[in-house]
Image 1 (cartoon, each protein chain N blue to C red):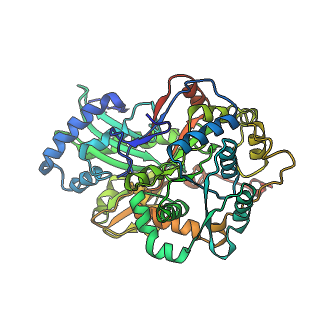
Image 2 (image 1 turned 120 degrees about the vertical axis):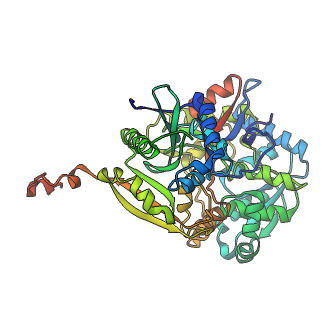
Image 3 (image 1 turned 45 degrees about the vertical axis):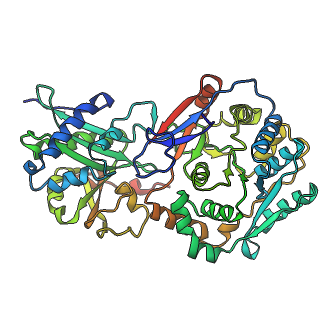
Length: 213
Length: 305
């Protein structure tokens, strides 16, 4: 099966909502690892599948490009998974917003990883070299595993931890959760692209290279 | 529909934002007649506002805009009521001195309200911010004290034209969820109204301002900037026809920005408010070229996320 991944647009909204509604109706079939992730996915404004429209806004909406969704399709053009992200307003970085896989998705972890790779590459081409993930603290290890591939290119930091139902100490932390408090402890991870120089040990330099004045 | 009216989602009566993700709609009406000079448009605005709110109080800060607004009322043959907020320990003494001087010039006895920061912050700030969804300390302060005044108040707005890090990097006309929109929310609760649409009273007034020669020169510049508290405003109003009020010899206006003289007063309390509301206010950017097109064609509803 070949891989079909593309950025989604307003015309895809009905398909996304239908896939998500079916998935949420069949939550019991979701993998144990991602069960809470799905709850997380729709929690940015508590309106269930209605949240997806913000990620595929038409071009006449100012800021329509701020939120982006990418879809994974099978050979029959059936949507198998969607991930969404939100670019931050005042820095070249973005927040990983949600993952939803279809009820009959198959190897969802592989598909999610391929979608993630596509999205990260897409963002890099647009000059976004830094991104954040908000995850339930007790599922942190699972999230770490999901992003193993990304850490080959990216430094990973624990940016913040916010206790359940607690207002973060710093206002900026709220921007990662979309202004929302969670009923459980959360972890905010930061991924920052490794520069070519720090990731390549074979590069040699001499004293004159440092003479930047 | 009212010029520069706003609402959230699909319901035009919905003035309150409930989540971080919510579509903000801003309606811009088109011109229906040929615009006059800025001064003439301001006088029309003064007359129309006064006819609707005959006992309205102008919130006179002493800044450029409030002086132009007061002068427009006077030129329209109206002696308005004036309301001045006086901060403690002379924090806005320079501004209020200008405001008082203006009142004296036109034989107006202003209503002076003394602000008590400590009581306001401890007892009223958060409740007021939550009620009216004011995102900043200063606007929350205004909302509280105007509520106490219990009169119709004209809180003078300004034409906010900036070129900063908005997506298009273009000179843009800006409306903000905080200072431009909270009066509508205030008016949902109160019989006495807050009007903050003097310089945005009509499409013709906005157009007249935006097409002044000095503004047309400004928007050609590639540097970041905004219409700020410098001699540019002097030139704007001079070109707009307020030659009696400001001329080339008018001393450069120095704003004391009272709240900022207490370290953190404004910033820390604004942050506290925004943490309570759980989101920051957004700016609705309309690029200069777009707003000129909208004003001269059929109007438009702009949507923001």
